[in-house]
Amino acid sequence: MYDDEDDDDNIFTFLRAICLPIILAVASILLYRRSNAKKQEASSSMPGNPRGKYPLLGDTLELLNPKSMASYQVSSRHKYGPVWRTNVLFNKCIFVSGSEHLHQLSKQEQLHRNTTACFPPHHRALFGNHSVLVTSGEEHARLRSLITPALQPSLYKEEIDMAVSAFVLRCKNEKDYFPLVDAFKRFTLSVALRIVLGERRWQEWMKSDNNNSRLVALLDDFSIWSKGLLSPPTSFIPFTASYYAMKARKRISNILLEVIEEEKQVLNSQDESSRNRNQNKKCLVERLLRATTNNAAVESSLTEEAIIDNIFTLVFAGTDTTASVLTSALFELAKNDELRERLQDCVEKEEFEENNNDAADEILRAFLAEVQRCYPAAPFTMRNIADTGADGIDLGDKHGSVPPGFNITYAIAGTLLDDEDSYPNPSKFNMDRWLKTRDSKPPQNWAFGGGCRTCPGRFLSVAESVALLRAVLSRKHGFQLKMKIDQDLTFSYTPGYFPKDGFIVKVESNS
Image 1 (cartoon, rainbow, N blue to C red):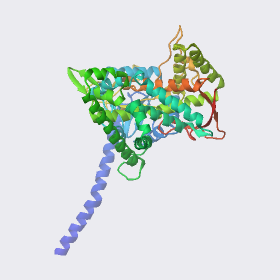
Image 2 (cartoon, rainbow, N blue to C red; image 1 turned 90 degrees about the vertical axis):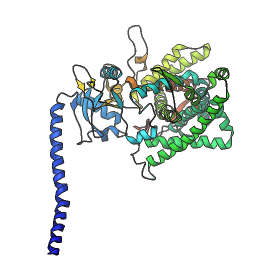
Image 3 (cartoon, one colour; image 1 turned 180 degrees about the horizontal axis):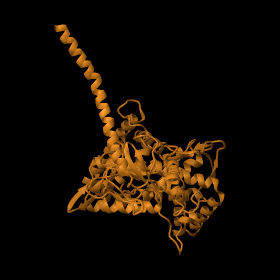
Image 4 (cartoon, rainbow, N blue to C red; image 1 turned 180 degrees about the vertical axis):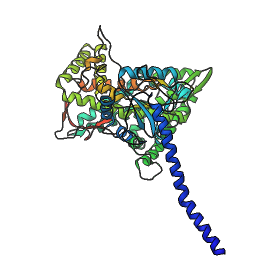
């Protein structure tokens, strides 16, 4: 009798182990189909034409493929129109392209303030929880008001000029072919470190063998960290790119904490008058330590963690994108002798007159804007529409409203490369489209994003690029490039937008 009962229990246990999961799986499928049917019924009024290659994943693989981030958007515009919907990272997503539609989206985002940052967890960990890039709402606005004044390009003219001089000299000393992409990444990182540390500390570290090795380690660690941004989220698995990126972030943070502590001691030892006398000699760390704002009658400032997170975000995360723009700019100049001669004439006229030539500045900025359009370094930005009680994001009468819970994406590459209304003949490189005339004004440049989350470091990036272009184009002190034959110049995102073989060149002095 005991054995029979034991057998019955075993059979029951076996049936429960096998049948219960099957029943639950079938029930889940039925519930999913029911909810999906409701979504499909409701989606008939959703903005955009539906597309999606895979269930749940939708177009995630195409969008995040380094080779197809831009071409995916252009082909989607051609097939589905300026607004389309799909799934990205297991969530419904509306893509918006075209300058007119992005302008409407930008206005709505600024009006309702109901969008939140949309980043995977490992990106948030790499940037930091206090980063202006990943925060939203009032905290995001507070951080921007504290950080933006410390990023004015005029504050760091000495640091930028010194880095440019060192870059030009280093390139001229190269006797053979070398990858220009690597040189630009090193240049933008050196500008970032000079700004963060201050020119005085940078020079002191360069003269000290111990600190010089710290600079080399910082440059290497930032390269490791940036590679983690495009790697799978596997920081919990040893010996993966994400794992090494988080380790590199920790080492960088420890060095930055030392610098912050040094600056705090200096600030505490000075009186107000001596601080003001050195107003133009401050490094970014000191400016962020002193940053305060008055929001709703409550004075606020930045914590040490917030300073470190935003140094990663605003300065170092921008080094790859700035290096990308500079690579593309020199690539165009190497291909187009007529364009190079035109820009050289502008720079030479300024040097000859020995005064500040606003016309040369305007032309160089127009050239950079067209480079950013043809080679978009940041191909898209994504938000999530928060459920704040508002009606979502209204894309106008033609496309309707995007409800809360959806992701919404600025299709920047699709706009810059394919919007013929805003950029006539978009396949042609034409810097004149960005120059002001009596009858028209330049189009909107979406290269730095839009809405209330437009990149706050954009002016610093442009200032670096203009300063380097002036130096390279100078007929007295600059140089020209000779491209190596038979190299692969196919561009892809790595992050930044770079040629596969690193744009291998040889430098020929202009003088």
